[in-house]
Image 1 (cartoon, one colour):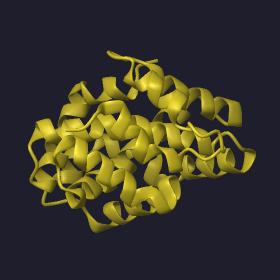
Image 2 (tube, rainbow, N blue to C red):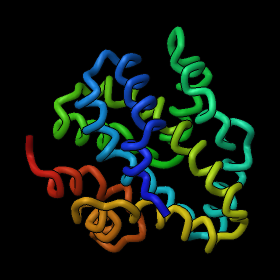
Image 3 (cartoon, rainbow, N blue to C red):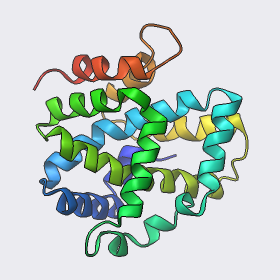
Image 4 (cartoon, rainbow, N blue to C red):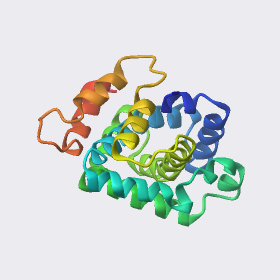
Length: 199
């Protein structure tokens, strides 16, 4: 299975980068830097959440929602034309809150420090990217007939692990719960700083 970073390098991914870049007034290089770091982190957080029956059921239900069934990828030009609809960014904000919880600002700050993009713009990039990411997951869920906890964990694991050009994403998946407390989010901000270095 192709990894999530392969998606960014595809024609669809280039359309996403261009649209998000225009929406946030950031260069495509900086937008790409943010997304290349953030998407594996978001996926790893989702995978951890899906490791419990309740979390897996919640994610599977979210991916069955009409907003996250993959249609968003079929109309990227409409998504970005005239500015991203507030419903999309509101959905993205809700997704981030659910995935990252109280650590959302810390994650945005860590991404900001590494990428050189201000934290407010990082947050906006993530709010736009989150519904697209869930849409892609929903599309893959439907195409692969995923309906179980093990299935969704395997699907997300494949997206995290596919197409790696460095070992950074391996480290992402193994270090997300560095303190062994079962909660990855309290480790993410520190992990980003240590994994990618100081800018």
